[in-house]
Length: 247
Image 1 (cartoon, one colour):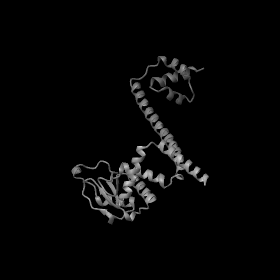
Image 2 (cartoon, rainbow, N blue to C red):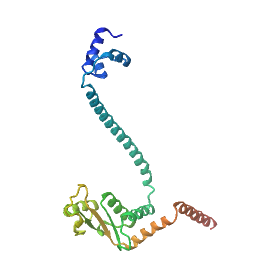
Image 3 (cartoon, rainbow, N blue to C red):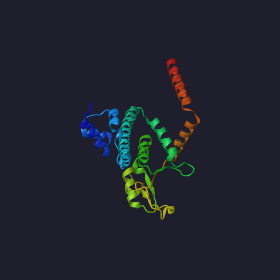
Image 4 (cartoon, rainbow, N blue to C red):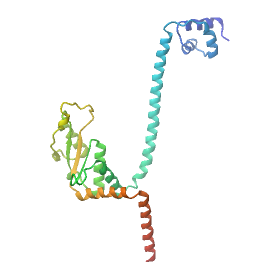
């Protein structure tokens, strides 16, 4: 039961534009909403009250959005960690055949094809792609960095020395093995908006036979379904086992 003194205080605070939560905080005890509505039914709100409520709603919305973003980031982090743990289980299963398929797929998307360029050449503005490519070349074909050369395609307002230094660190290739290039004339007078853009690094080396092998591998995979290949492999394994048992 709320006494008259408390009731009058509630009415006074409400008339001064205090919200329900603010009044509870002032009184230091919880008032049932039905009781609060009954007591304040005759209270006259100040003219600025609705503007105050709009402002509070905006502030609460910002807080809710910030909390949602934080929660989503936490969920995403947990999801990414689950993916990482799952993918780590594959690492021990990656032999040279699997790595070569990965290299072929990477080269299919980013590498120069045989008719336009004889020898291996792959270019990208993504340092992660370049690093993966070099690791696969080393693992599959034992191609060391001293066999590589590079070329950096860049925009007119970029400093080629800084770009070559960046890509030299990424690739491990000496800057003495970087070909000199001219900026893209189409970018003259057009400032580079993405400050993280480091141009396109093309990594080159001899290896026409490897180039043709990788291209042929992707063609064979595209021409035959993976299920057919799996069944064919199982058939070959079974045939080999049968042949050994007859010996």
